Image (cartoon, rainbow, N blue to C red; front, side):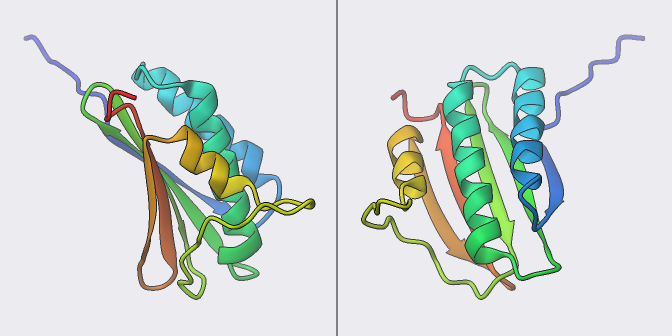
Length: 135
C-alpha cells in the first residue's frame, strides 16, 4: 500500500507576554520553514517574526495574556507569518523612526512582499508574506 503524506500547510504556537518569547517564536519559525523547505529568504522572515512578536509584546498583548504565531504555506514558494494578539485592536502604522526605536514595521515593510493588519475580536492580527510576488 502506497501512502503519501502531505506536509502541513499551517503551524501555530502560543507564547506568553514575555521577552523570552521572541527568540522562541524565531526558533519555531526557523524549524517550521526549514522542514517545509520553502524557498523564502529565511533571515528576512526571521527578522520579521522578531519584529512582529516584539510589537505584540510591547503594544498588543495585555499582561497575563498570550499571543499566537501562525505560519502558513502559500503554494510551493510562499509563506505568510501572522501574529495574533488580544489587545484593544488598535491597528499599527509605520511610524517615523526615533532615536530610541520605531523601526520595526519599517523593516517588515521593506523586507516582506506584503504586510498588513486586521482587527479581530479580541485584538488584531499583523501579518507579512514572502515569496509570492516574485520580488
